[in-house]
Image 1 (spheres, rainbow, N blue to C red):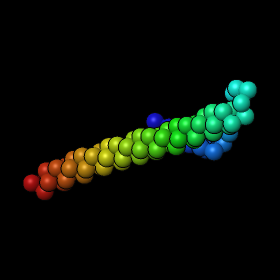
Image 2: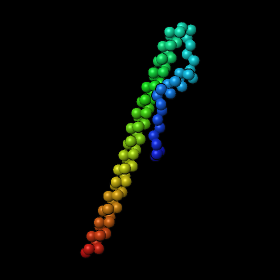
Image 3: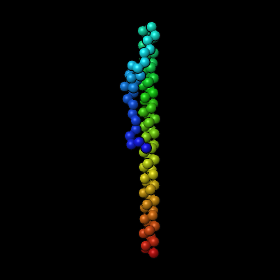
Image 4: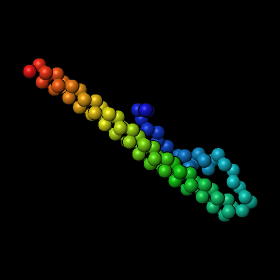
Length: 88
């Protein structure tokens, strides 16, 4: 498991996507609409990715914590069983 989740800056990602595409259609208004659509879709995609990544990371952390708690309980139970045998 990775120690740190991945985060994509939505604004920077959207700017990068728009700057990497040349969508000039011959009509300035149509070009602006297409670029705006590309920017907004890219930004939403990055936000969704961050949301999914954050939830996945939190689930993995919770699983690790649950595992560690379970191991701790098993160790405590084993210790108590040994201690009880010594008392008898």
